[in-house]
Amino acid sequence: MHHIPFAREGIPYVLMAAFVTLVLAVQGWTVLTLPALAATLLIGHFFRDPVRVTNAGDADLVSPADGRIIAIDRMEADPLARRPCLRVSIFMSVFDVHVNRVPVSGVVQEVRYRKGTFLAANLPRASRENEQNWVRILSDGGQEVVMTQVAGLIARRIVCWPRAGDRVEQGERFGMIRFGSRMDVFVPVESEVLVSMGQHVYGGETVLCRLK
Figure 1: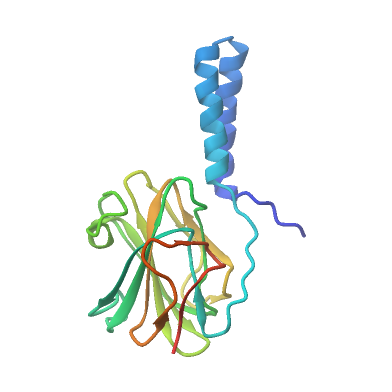
Figure 2 (figure 1 turned 90 degrees about the horizontal axis):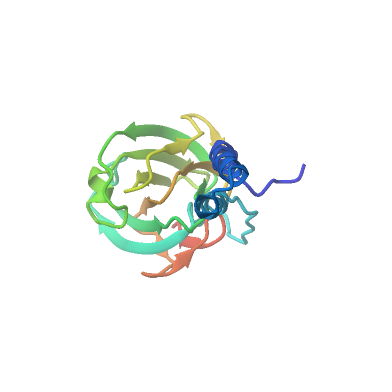
């Protein structure tokens, strides 16, 4: 079965925008039709879902999202396991692919959602105060990895499909965040980080770090 390079969650948005554009065009309102057409194309671009291929090894952790690395730091405790860890933060602009992918194969141990504010996702406070969803995975190698989907200033909807007990495979799609957001990844403190500040990474493809 061939993969359709478009996220199904975006279908209602594109259809609605296309319908509005069609109505405006039929009415002959050119001044309004052109912006509506541009909005339709932008929404279609936002919900794209390209095929990704990686050569990551079993001990490698691939990026769960497209975007720019905005933080690499050591934390005293991750949000769920409460163990010392390294955090790698990825900022997704409205121009990045927003489909999220599993960074490492394993079993989902916990999924937890928390309501919060909607600060700009690239602010340090966003990781503490914004609406977010945590996913904790026990990798096949025995390491615990926590991903945090963080809503942003425009993002108002976090989508996450796996549940506790589900088996997940590296690179497969597990959710998305609509219209600009952030992804924080927490890995064991002894992990080797393979990306740098400001680097643009690609979900399911770029290797973020190597688990020890």
